[in-house]
Structures are given as structure tokens and as C-alpha cells.
Length: 202
Image (cartoon, rainbow, N blue to C red; front, side, top):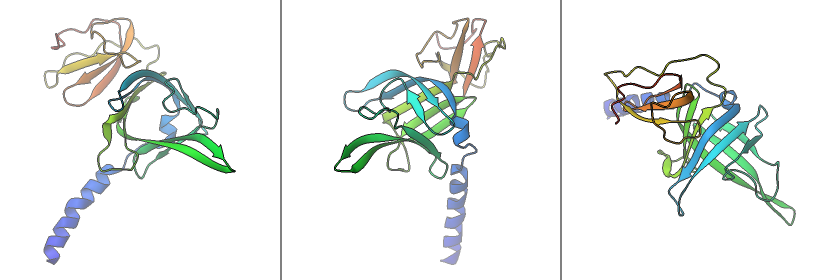
């Protein structure tokens, strides 16, 4: 029995270690462009520009995370223990009682200033992308460097290309910052000055 318990603990421990992330709230500060979408309650897919400031105050253009009655009450933070980003704002004031609206999205991808989060209010073992997905790219991530489009790698296949608002575009679009999504789950963000060749998605 002790051996079985020891093996069980060994199998659980690596999982909990892998859950820890190497980023903190400071990594989210800045201006982000992309979209917020949901398949619930009729669904939506709206463009979003979000600005997160150093004190946690934020603004965003879609309106889905913004107060409707009490402006400038919005705050945000990143919870490193649950890997979720938390937004909240004052929703109602009644009989001296303050009620806040809380929104939680779990970070599922954060690399090369490209961020994807899925709705996870209750800190469930798995988030719920069908209830809400936020896809953002940091506005200042690509500077004036004239980076070429990525060369097609035979070990991975290009699936889609997106612009900074999250709209799918032709991977051969030139003169724009594009996000390339591959079949191995990775993404690349580049300023595309040259048409993308041999993408394999035509």
C-alpha cells in the first residue's frame, strides 16, 4: 500500500510543478490588440484593444470587461497560483453595499508577446474556450526591424495567419505584422515584408 501511495504521489507531483508559470503581472502591462469571442448566449467575436497599466487599472474597447454604470472602477491582476488573469469593476451600489463584477480567464498560451486566455471563473481543471476566448498581441512587440516571413519548416505545417486584430488573413500579405499559427501548437509573430512561400494551406 505504501509503495502504491508513493508512486501516486510521484505521478501527481510533476503535474503540479508543470502548472507553475514563469510570468507575473508585470508581463501583462502594455497595449494589446486582438479579439474576444464566445459561443455562449448567441455568441460574439469582437475586436479588442486592451491597455493594462502598472497599477492594475485597465481599459478595453470591446466593452465585455468594462463597467456599465460606474466608470473608472476597473482593476486587474494576475494570480500566479491559479494561472488566471482577474478583472473586476464596481457593478452596483445599493443600501451602502458595493457589488463587484469579477471575470477570470486562464492563460493557455503566452509566448513572443502573443497571449491566449480561456474563460475559467471557478478555477476548473480545464478552462472553457467555448464560453470565452481572448486572443491578444502586444502592440509594441515588433519594432522597426524588417523581419522576413518565416521559412516553412518541414517538421511543422502552417495552419493560419492572423493580423493584430485577430482576423484571419492571407499568409502572403506583405507590409504587416502577422501571427502565424502552426500545427504543433506554436505561433510566430513577424513583420511580413516578403510573401510567405510554400505555406501548405492553399
